[in-house]
Length: 341
Image (cartoon, rainbow, N blue to C red; front, side, top):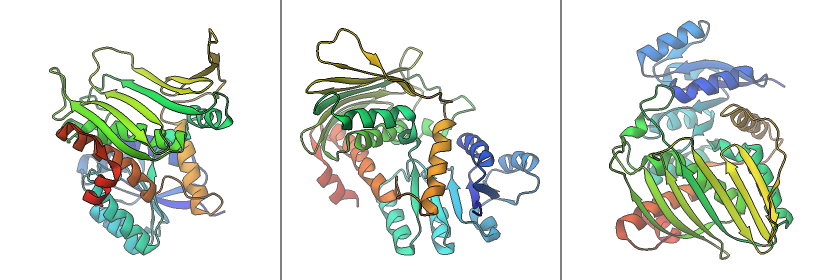
């Protein structure tokens, strides 16, 4: 089949991964690049001398692209989304789709009205550990799952040049940039939608972030499932502490590493049984799987996943955390939906 012709929008830290992954995919041809930063454009020009490179997507929109990959900050995508919709270009956008639920809802409606596929890059869905956990929980191996505990404790030094720096000044960076992955994983793995949230967000005294980098929440899902969640980017210790445990009527499933470490046990068994997983290369294997799925979706061989419409459900969880913390009260997803979409 003819390769998908792709524009990469944004040439910052995350784009380096996407340029490698897209460049290695035989089903993708990169046809143009763009970024408002002259230094980023100059660097890209040296690396890709034969590609048109613009300051804005409108500078390269006439390259006959089939799709655009938005590796851009979430706070200013209006013109990018509008240009893609006007020119019939499918969109794969880095998460979150926007830093405003109302704006994200507007983008979703815009794409749907134009008949444009809008996919959000929730690459953690495509980790082998995620797929295997979902299979285990659906198999009945631990009976009926009824509650979970999700812990993510990391020292994220936002001054490192291999990381995006904009979270240092954004509102609720942990929620918008990291917890959004975790909330999507909960919905995906448990195949359940959120109903209400109780939460508290805060910053430790030593934080380098302008807004809250710590989140503690209790999330109630429809059907009676509950998850206690703790996430921080300002943990005082390395390495990262990742532990996602799910308890069922007959046992537990636990993921002990961000990209692996999956194990399970029946009730009262004294040791966990590890689950074999294929080799994984951090940030690469999952991005390869996501991009491959995106191509397959555009070609009609698999159903659409991670759509903008689906992503809104996870964004509502995020907004509910913010409101619940501000109010010191339980907030329902229905209320947030009415307020923001």
